[in-house]
Amino acid sequence: KQEVTQIPAALSVPEGENLVLNCSFTDSAIYNLQWFRQDPGKGLTSLLLIQSSQREQTSGRLNASLDKSSGRSTLYIAASQPGDSATYLCAVRPSQTGANNLFFGTGTRLTVIP
Amino acid sequence: DTEVTQTPKHLVMGMTNKKSLKCEQHMGHRAMYWYKQKAKKPPELMFVYSYEKLSINESVPSRFSPECPNSSLLNLHLHALQPEDSALYLCASSQGALGGARETQYFGPGTRLLVL
Image (cartoon, rainbow over all chains, first blue to last red; front, side):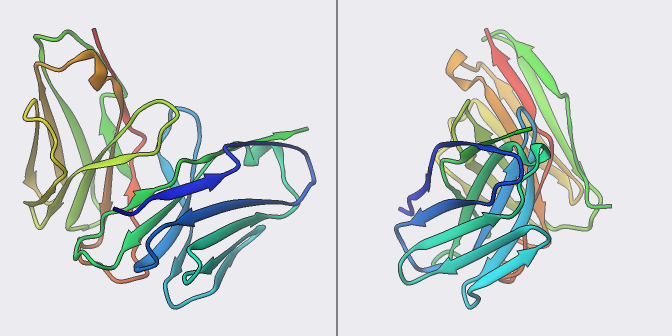
């Protein structure tokens, strides 16, 4: 079964810093990888989706990379802002099954200090 | 409209109660999902409906009973729950359950359930 791990579990940075969140997965047979944001007690918002054939995706201050062969992805956040404070989850969609089920990582809780 | 709505937002129930969670989307998506998320844990898939038919049941206890009355609605019927079932229940939808590599799931805000 696919195992998805995120490091660190929690991160606290001053406003304006650039930061990197890490995600690793055990089975490289994936269809795509997504990064989500979750605010406390709320649902998930999709930030970036990287297809298995892609190496990276960018949206504004966010850049996500994917190294499928080594089972790793990173989410880079530039010039962090207090509004970026949330839990960030990565999720992989396995390619073996036909359904669009996602396996989520353990999450990184980010706090950006003003 | 890229919104998935869930009601109620909060629910407190006793172990002998019967209640239902409701999820709705009007994006024309043909796949809908229920996830369970315990505190400080990642979401875990419970059920997948594809074209209103149950396609995945991740060995969920029978006290949870999903229902998909039409392509826009997804219900989760709850009966004789245990305190350990207390969690955030998330609904999601996507264009199709066999979607392409670019397809994402859209999540609702969740229902926070407390079983006493």
